[in-house]
Image (cartoon, rainbow, N blue to C red; front, side, top):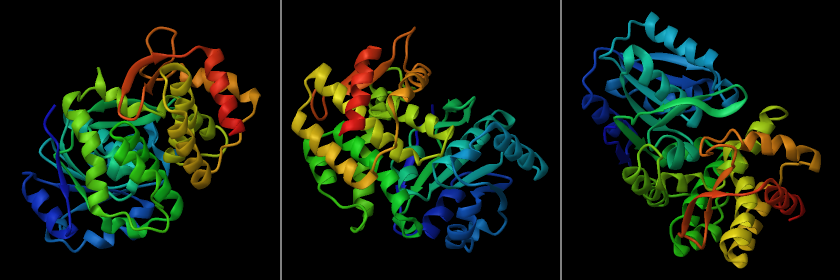
Length: 347
């Protein structure tokens, strides 16, 4: 898989012009959703490189990360005359970069693409690392491929367009990166107020460096890249259950998943209860709680069985012995998972 270049931008227009110029192309397509068309496209549309760009607009939120939307994007690419030498720019949050990256990776057996993440979540997680895909059959990211963007441009100017909930959604992934890296990074994150304080480009760059280091070592998730799944086995189950009821933001689901999986860390791998409780208190204060009952346990466990990390009939987790001490391919029994869900409900 080709190397991915990450640009920490202080001038989005200059960075975009240079990135587009570096990718030889015959046609330029820009994928946006209805929100980024209104609030983010005006920040870049005057760039010289964008003058001949052709827009493809899709619906916003994860409910549109579907095969139907993907088919629409392919049809638009075809209608607009895209060839295997064309270039796609994905301007948006994780849904846009995931779906747009998949569309680009499969159209004409693959065209080049650039990601410009416009949400904190997509900056620190979704747009970096080469994972592309869509939801399918009620399951998160069920269909997709690994394929790096030519480059990813990170510019915190876009964060000024975001509301509190979306800032917190991205911050949950930052908190996860802190837990899998160093106690100092975790401590800084758990003591920071992401709502009232400004998230700087330096914070974003530092956080992205954690993921970059891991995906460079293991680009297709056969080993250590599974570290990035901390909080996600339970988190994706929460998110999939919410899709059946009232959808929640991905980062909120990850935050709830962290509570469940940090409890398992304490029980199974000796993780610090003090660090677990500080992290849980931070999550409880900022993210609230998704209401579940004991009656939801069988469905949540069923959804966990669909996790891509599983082997056979076991449910696999990424757990921690302590901050930065990553234990991949850990299993838990259904009774242990139910205990962890009890803890989630009671905390």
